[in-house]
Image (cartoon, rainbow, N blue to C red; front, side, top):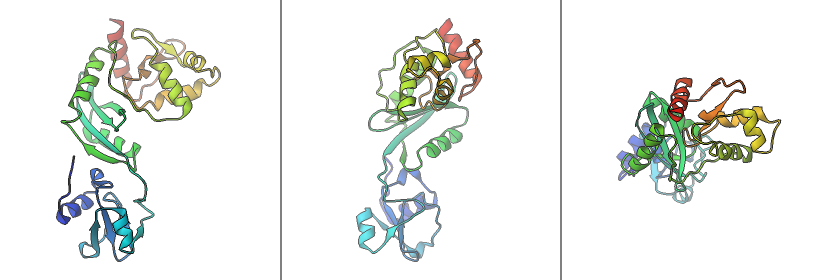
Length: 239
């Protein structure tokens, strides 16, 4: 895990708006009377800043929570890694409970920016060593989508979204379903548009196989991580 052993390291993290520093320490800005997290958009001068290990310490110094970065929120920690698969890069992020996000792409910075946008109030910590086995399992699943993943998952969503994602995981490799099929499976036969939206919001590429959902006429329709990847995944499953 990233550590910040002294005020110079904390100042550098603040200037870099380091998301790994979320909740690791708090920044007191004495000219405005607020305390913040490292990723806050404010740009105070170094002479006006003090660092505090906890929110309670900042409040004891007479500071109030910043309305912009909301340092009083309880922040979960997500560990993440980006690595290669046979279909490009994969970003894997994990909470204490299990896999929270698996995305595919071609640019590591774009994948990281998407992670930060999705989880605006989380502490996001790079952990290549700790997540190497998770990344390997995802890469293996990309190559062998008929295999069963044994890692725990922690997909968060609405009740409908979670029902749709659970239904998607019941589609066997080598088979496809339409949005209308999934709508019937979750007991909402007229909600195929909502089902399509839930498929688009799927946070776990390949693990929750939304690539197995096609149009009623068999067309591929869209895929958040690229139609070519969808076509490749379906071709591997059909082989």
